[in-house]
Length: 145
Image 1 (cartoon, helix red, strand yellow):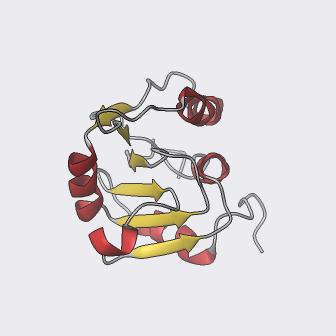
Image 2 (tube, rainbow, N blue to C red):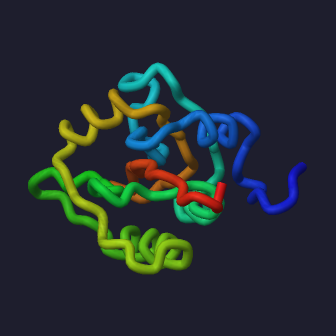
């Protein structure tokens, strides 16, 4: 066990976060997401909610400042979003990165394509619909590494 590392961050996830470079993307996927079908590199965080993972990851992870750092799936026509999902994520994210804008929403198949190209997909215990979120890693400021 390490001091300052949230218990929800497994050794494997910590290693992957350290291996990621600027522009690499990580998908925090809900329990419904076809992670193993779209990406060969999948970590499991069963039983862990995405907001909890965000709270553990963001002290360790710089969000990209050049491109959109947060992406979520837009609802399929006829489906409804639960606004509380994004709101809970933004509350957690803004605790660590205060001026973060709301996530960009892209269609389901566009999100799957981004997940295919992502550095890793983390399958969580999140059960909310349309709860997947993609984070793009930025450059750690000099002196903060």
